[in-house]
Image 1 (cartoon, rainbow, N blue to C red):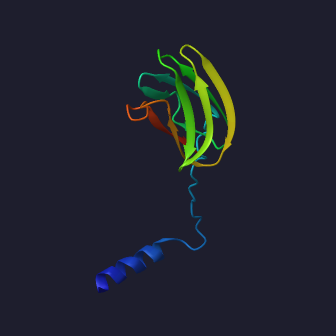
Image 2 (cartoon, one colour; image 1 turned 120 degrees about the vertical axis):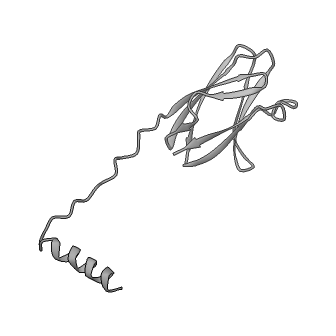
Amino acid sequence: MRLALSLALAVLVAIPAGAAVRRTTLPPPPHLPQATEIVETEYAIDLGRPRLGQGRVRLTVRNRGEDDHDLTLLTGTRVLHTVFVAPGDTATFGLRLAPGRYRLICTIADHRALGMETILRIG
């Protein structure tokens, strides 16, 4: 106990009065993009960027499969947006999204059960 107290006092005495204390600041968070491309095939949804910045985002959905697909954006169980995309077609839409996790699914037939589900992170 005496040794620990002696070491603590030695450290305090060794620091000159009025010595500047360096403060380290964390770098700002990286700028997150506001748009991504989403590619749907049988039976997958691939996000070009799985994380976007909060606020107005632009999503471009490409159906590179042979089946019809939709893209439904959910927060919890609430549907925020659904877009239908025929084979070979592209659809683009924008939404204002708060920070959080959003589920992207295809609701056609059993596509979700076959793997057409992923998470988009905002913020």
